[in-house]
Image 1 (cartoon, each protein chain N blue to C red):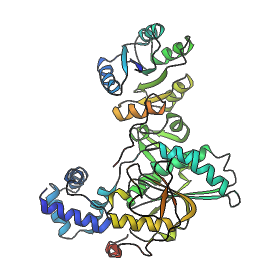
Image 2: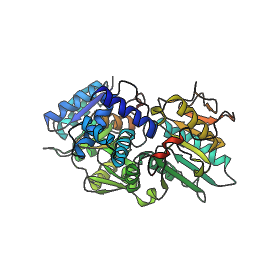
Image 3: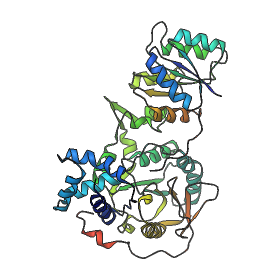
Image 4: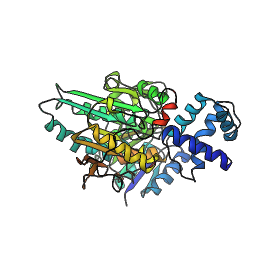
Length: 288
Length: 129
């Protein structure tokens, strides 16, 4: 890949998705885009870039999706799900005892492993949640990824990373080499396509937001902007869960960390949030 | 150091498993069938058993039943590691006292995830992107 090709892709990804690649991520581009080049019958990255420059919105969409799809697996990092079960849910069940409703948002729902992990956790608590209305909304930038999530079909490899065998037996049905999560668990998750750079206030107000391993791709200003808008879309006593390598510290004071619970944050009540989405220019991208 | 008994009739699989588990800090013993594995357990009960299903002499399922009846045989965490990848086999294994189940082919990530699941190893540093 030539330096100009790399710069072109960096800028394009920044403009379309907010993905902020540092100067040394050639390997990431190659590992994600070479398969796409081959699939499109192109010889390599340079040809891919040429075709994009010539104007191919569908190819650009595919490139953005290929670059922004994260690795994900069931109960990734485990600890956030322990927090969810042992701290977040007990507190929310107490706090919402009158209302009996809980809204959860997976802001980078990807291929479904995270929202379905939460759904399986909630299923285990169904006695405590009898008569409650529980919503899990999974959003992702990529329609292709959302389709996979909706289908809830996973490879043997995917169901072995992080998913306890008991839960596989309990909630999945085997179909040859593939495993599909039960209709009951699938029905607990709603799917919406969403770009975090755009306004998401229409989703309503949430008690819990999982926003893991996605902000890491954004530059600092975009992160601050998204944190500001996330805070506005949360209950004052809600919980924000970030990825293991992410933090609000040093970026914004609209969330404060729980000192004893890594990755867990709560709105601070501070009002430094910007009013509008950061990058209206990307509205140019069709369908997003 | 925790000990893991690797039971598989394939020398290649035992070698791969040994390499992965040694890297995770286990001291490894090997057995090529269930009967030999049972002898190992009678001498010194391991902390973990990575267990193939189909083997000559005594298969993994029969070994597990025998192990769980030994004094102290309820202690080892048993993780099946087999090409038997259907729900029926998995259910039978769990019913017989298996703690986890790996469907071959496996790799280091899967072994680590499963051993973590049953508490044999600590949580590794959370993965970043």
